Image (cartoon, rainbow, N blue to C red; front, top):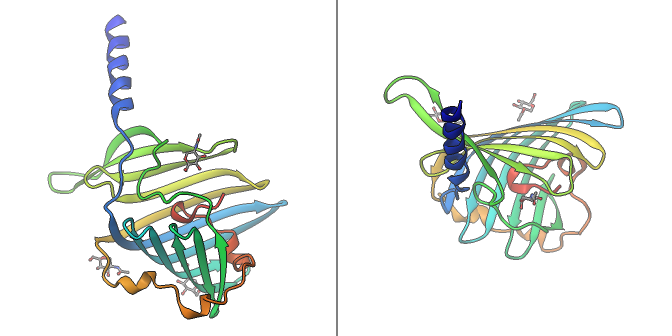
Length: 218
Ligand SMILES: *[C@@H]1O[C@H](CO)[C@@H](O)[C@H](O)[C@H]1NC(C)=O
Ligand SMILES: *[C@@H]1O[C@H](CO)[C@@H](O)[C@H](O)[C@H]1NC(C)=O
Ligand SMILES: *[C@@H]1O[C@H](CO)[C@@H](O)[C@H](O)[C@H]1NC(C)=O
C-alpha cells in the first residue's frame, strides 16, 4: 500500500514537471473546426475549414477559409490577427471590419496549462505519434479546454473546449493537420487596402460566434 502511494507520488511529481511548450516560431497548417452551441434554448452548429499561418516573430496570424452555419449560411472569410497592433481584421464578402485584441498571443500551450499525460496515436514501430495532453481552465468562467501537441516540437494536434460563454453553452473541437514549418508566402500577413477604412463594428455575425484557440475572444 505504501509502495503504491509512493509510486503515485513520484508519478504526480513527474507529471507536474512537464512544462507547457511553445510551437515552432513559424508554421502553417489546415484546421477543421466544429462549434456547437445553445443560444436561449436554440441549438446551432458551425463548421469551418481554413488555412492557418502563424508567425511568432511578427506576432501575427492569418486564418482563411470557409464557415458553414446551421440554416445553410456559408461564408468565405479571412481573419488577420496583429498582436503587436492589438487589432484583428475580419474580411467577409470583400468587407473588412476590425476589432481590438485584448489577449496576448499564444503559440502552442498556454503557460498556465496543466500537463495531463503523454499518449500515442497509431501502433507499431515507426507508426507511433507521441503526444502530450494539456488542460486549461479559464479565470472566472465555467469554461475549460484540452489541448494536444506532439511531444517532438510541440505541434498542435487538437483543441477541445466546452463550457458557458455569455450564458450560451458551447462545445468546440479543432483539429490541426498537414502542418508545415515556416511561412511559404509572407504576404498572408499583409492587411489588405480595404481594411484601411475598416469600421469598428463587430465582425460578421457568423464569425462573431467563432472562437478558436488562436483567436479566442472569450
Ligand atoms: C461548407 O458547405 C459547402 C457546401 O455544402 C461544402 O462544400 C464545404 O465543404 C463546407 N465546408 C465546411 C468547412 O464544412
Ligand atoms: C490561463 O490563460 C488563458 C490564456 O491567457 C486565460 O484566458 C485564462 O483565464 C487563464 N486561466 C487562469 C485560471 O488564470
Ligand atoms: C494533406 O497531406 C496529405 C499528405 O501529404 C496530402 O495527400 C493531402 O492532399 C493534404 N491535404 C490537403 C487538403 O492539402
